[in-house]
Length: 248
Image (tube, rainbow, N blue to C red):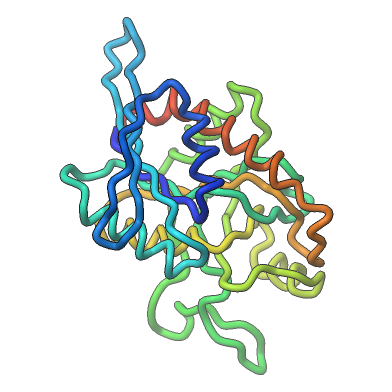
């Protein structure tokens, strides 16, 4: 399988690469977009006939627009088509679905604030008559990823992953998002942008997030970034020996 993994910042990319430790990394090359792409060769499973795979890793920057540009640059430059695009990193978790350290596997990637405020409340872009605010991973993919995490003892949940342009910092905003998306488990700033780029190139996409903080009142002292990066590392260690070697 050929997989493109897009993160926001280098610390997240470093955790993904560490999770794929033992795989052979190439020297980074610079894409036309200016982003650095690192290729990791994923060995096949000896004695099973499983072919080797490739994981390309890009840190694209913060926010849906930056993420879309980075993903588009990598997709356009690829000499061979990717089989899967993964948006990943750390983010906020909605209580009670996703406590700190949980890995959220998306069954929907949702642009949670792409629409309009009206006197009657929020209206999603689809209701306005143009655009879309949701991308779906391929049928069964989220469950396969969840199965790999479960087999490795990684705490996880399969649920919608929300993309926002402004990180939630109040209880009122958290309650508003939860009311509109009652199953949502995570909030981050890049997933929908990556999904838009993947869709434009006809490549399946999924979002995988490790929870570093609770969605709600902003309290940096309560964030657990190191623990979330550890969870991200563990998740990709499991995916690099299972799902990333399978056919979609």
